[in-house]
Figure (spheres, helix red, strand yellow):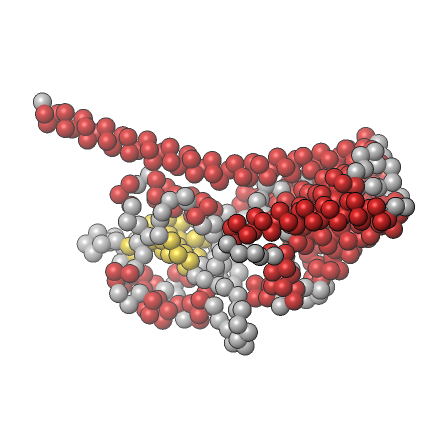
Length: 443
């Protein structure tokens, strides 16, 4: 009887551990998805504001076409749920535009729009770039210029910057002007080039056309049709592209905030089409949806899938509490503890920028890829320091195969990543687990 009770107790413990692991895993899923859903909700609110603004400035028909162009943009789908500062910058820019004093707007409110611009600036200082021509236009047309500065811009700027300073003082433990540090790092020292650089014309020749995609011909067509009051929006787009072109480090997401401005002109194009309207709508929708689905669900998905595997390693297998993970990939290839939420020892190849001014600076990732085998032999000269799990791109497997075999690593999982591998990025991601001698099964 006692043996039977012991068996039942042991079984109950196993079940409870399984349930706890399941509950913990569900909790992690919430922590991952809630920020995305919140960002998606904010993006949806911004899209509705854009629709409402165009309805005020034009009519419901025109607003419908602008809304359609915004919703079927592949890049909007790609970015709108991502918790990037660029996404929040775009959301605040659209909502601020709703309150901006455009000719014909019924919702203009200088206090609201300037507060939103100030908040966007605190979140990401580059948010001020597209607003420079807009604010200058507002100031130029404002009759009470001194009141605008003294009673609106300066108080709002002072309060917002003060709150930012206080929050940063609490978290950094010292007075820190983050906006200045951002300017110093990216502009004055131009250290962003450490993460890649492109020629000055990249935004005009590649970045902007790629972000607009199949909207590009409609945008160009709409630029010739839109009334003069929308010229300020076109100037804002060109100004933003020119300013960003002066910086060496360039990314598609940097110009995301001006994409909704472009949709105004695309909407004008669609509104004026007559005979070819249905084919044009079908072309826009299908081309963008295919690209949105591919980039959102297929392209470079492996880095997320592998972190789901790491989650399951933590929560579904309690006996794996002694596990450790080394991500041997280009730095920041995968999410980190934000997708795990478990005290699992993890490490990745570091790539901090050079703040000392060395001429031949190489980060840890660069040194590793110069000679992976040599680096591994030096780093793990003692078997006791070896991690239990390695995560690598498929392109690296052959080069370090001798290390994997000699250290008793077995491939336990494979995840598709991309159809377009390049450089240090492979088409698949491999997970290797270290087996004890005698339990290693060669695959």
